Image 1 (cartoon, rainbow over the protein chains, first blue to last red):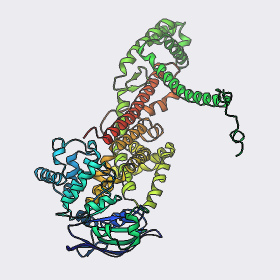
Image 2: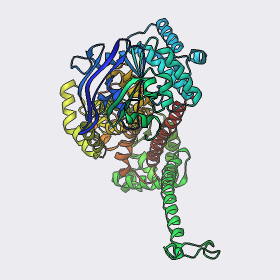
Image 3: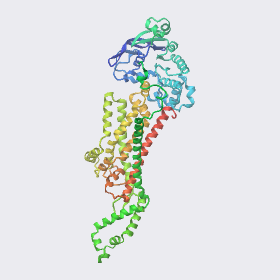
Image 4: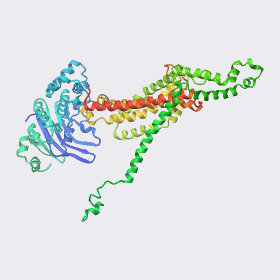
Length: 252
Length: 372
């Protein structure tokens, strides 16, 4: 097992009075793909969003426990959320390009970090798009609106946009759920490639996808972490009956 | 449910499925259509009326001339009592001009008015607005300049304030505050403009005079700031709606890239809402352009041309408001006021149309990705 990148300790989350996550403790290793699976409403997306504090945006959310990224508690009062999110990037379920050109989309992150040099920006944009396997498709139309890209291309461009700020961890919230099988295959291939240099946490509804792309799998149910371990083990010989039932499709 | 025909209310047969004429449906449909057309017709008729009344300026219409000559006659009768008395007698030579006019009424007066009527059409582009004088001049330029000046001043104040307030409300204010701010400012939109005018007249005018130390108490600046008060709620509301309509995913994407809330608001939310903000400003301009009461009360109403913001101005709308009640029906002056009305109408109509079509086109393009 590689070194631990993210640790959560007794992490609970409440929407108002309702408990959405119940005391979750888990270790996520560096430069591996960790998949969260579970039925809708089980808290897996909520949990993902606590890892870069995107839940802060929702009014009425209360969190107890700790999330340690590189041994630093990100819910400490001293932590700057803005810099945290540069380190822990996120890709969303629905591709969400800005209504700008492809170039401007990818250059947005570096730009807000104060890089204004045109050549430098071009370099970053090109390498990010290459890392996301979309450079060949868009290199001749960098000034076209990103809205004109297909769904799959948009999603890969969004990944490139995330890569442009050089995060260490990438959180993916069902990145392929709105895509066709070919685009999905491309995203999965991309995830394989990215895990060489990034720690990836992915939420997915698609169990085959979890089995294909992940090294570790965590099964969530009703806000609790039911089982967490090597993907192969979870999908072949799970310890808990619940996990087995979900994976074999008996509920969910 | 033994008998489905009973619960359904009719027996399913060829007979019962025959087309029926339903009176209530027919009537309600016709009434709604009628009301719709009625309102459209009324608007069109108003426009035609306003437009029609302004047309005589461009022709020398006999009807208009006649009315005017009658009026002139009366006035002369009152003013030059002596002259009328003397007209048939010895003092002929003393008031030669007056009596000549009175005696040869139909001919002389006709030609005089005729002459000034032709002159009127030309003087529309002049720089003097002097509708009540011996030699009336109807130059619209000072009124246009006055209106534009007021609009500019009002927009310089209203647009930044309203847009920033909307940005605050949409992107920064906590939920409870937002729920309070928005309705409160929207209530201001229904504020009677006479109250704003009154406030400008009594309070703002003195305040600004003490602050800047200029001479004329009522001027374009005071008027413009007062108009800004009237325009802010409109610009605010529409901008706020446009900003809130920016998909949440945009904000999330930006924040997840490590942008601060300000960066997100300025570089993502605001640009995405530009078409809406543009429309908001256009509607604000429309409001200021047509605003009468505040202009009447706070601008001083002297038709002057100049760039000094502390000079008095007279706006197009205020001119109608001030003079329509005293004008002679069918007079050239009357026609010119209607011309001003038509111009206001056309201007506001095009502004609204621009706001509507530009924004729709722009939004559609932007979100379907047909432009960069």
